[in-house]
Length: 437
Image 1 (cartoon, rainbow, N blue to C red):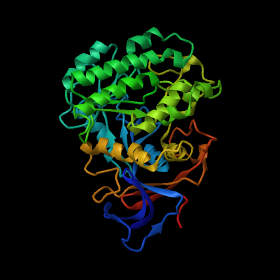
Image 2 (image 1 turned 30 degrees about the vertical axis):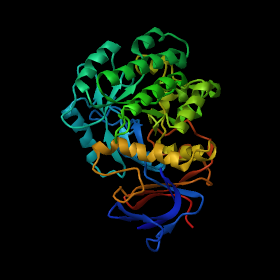
Image 3 (image 1 turned 180 degrees about the vertical axis):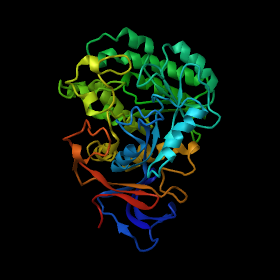
Image 4 (image 1 turned 90 degrees about the horizontal axis):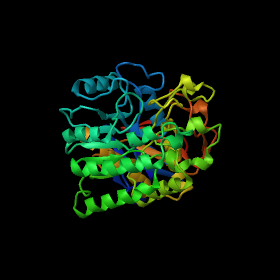
C-alpha cells in the first residue's frame, strides 16, 4: 500500500509518499512507487490520531453499556479520525488491582476491535500499584462511580505507594466542592478555585512522590502560570526531556470552543461537564495553551450519557451523578475529533506541525510504554495507521451520522470548515471521505 499527498508531521509538511506493509510503515519518501491513492492538496496526511482520555463505559458489570461500549466507542473514534484511545477507570467495577484490570482488559480483547485501547487503572483510598506497568488516574472529587477521595490528605497517603508511576489527575478540590454544592448553577458549584487549589496540590504531589504527572481536561486560565513554572523547573533539571516528560496537561475541544457566554437555557444541560465550561477569558487561555505548547494533548474527555439522562425535561430527583443531583456531567466528543482539528487548522490558524504534536506524536508517546506498536509519527517502524484531514471539505454535524451509542453531540447543527477524508488502520482504509485525486 502506497499513499501520496501532503504529509504532516512534527518536523514539517511536505509532498511525499508513505509505504505500508503488514500494517507497519516501511518507508516515507518522494518516489516509493505507483501510489494506490493520491490525496488532493487540500488534504493533510497525519499519523493516526490518538485520544488519551475517553470513557467507553464498558466493564464487567455491564451497567453502563447503554451509554457506550468498547465497540461503539471504537466506531465513533474512527468516524472522528482517531485510531487509538486511552480509557478511564471510573466504572461501576473500577480496575484498581491486577484481577479487576485483567477482567476489564478481557472485554477489550474478546473481539477484534479496529481501534487500539490503552486502559488506565484507578487510584482510590487504600489502593496499590499493579504488578504490571499501566497508567493511573486519580479523582480528587466525585465523578461517575465511587472512585474518588474525600480529602486531599487521604490522596496524599495513597499516592505514597505510587512513587515513580504515571498518574493523571482530575483536579477539583473535594473540600471546596462540598462547600459550593448548594450553588444554583453547575459552574458555580465547581468554581475555578476548586481547580486552582487542586492544581497546586497535584503539582506538589508530583514533586513529593516523584510521579510522572498529567493534569486532565484543564480549564482555568489562572492555573496556567503554575503549570508553566513547574514545566520550566523540570526542563531546567532535564526531567522533561525524556521520552516521558514529568508533567503534561490535556485540554478538551469543548473548553476551547464553548464558554459561559455561549450557554443558554436550552443548551446548558448538554454542555454540563466536570470541570465545567468556563468564562470567555478561560476559553481563550486554553486555546493559547494549545497553541503555545503549554498544553500537550487535545484530549476529549469523551463522556457519553443517554439523551434521557441529559434531557432537561427530567425532574431533578430522577437524575444526578457524583452526589450533585443536578444532571449528568459529560458529553460525547469522539465523532467530532477530526472536524474540530480542521477548525483549529482553518479558523484558528494552527500549524499542521502543532496539530501533529498535539494529536499524534504526544498521544503516541503517552501510550508507548503500554503498547507493542509505536503510534504517532510518519516514520518507518511506526504503525501504519493514518488520519487524513481535508481542510476544504466542510461537514455539518448531524445526529443521524454519529456512531457513538449515546446518539447526540453538543456540536449538532454546527458546520466545521474541514472534515475527515480517510482513516487507515494498519494500512487498511476503514473510513472513506473526500480528497482523492
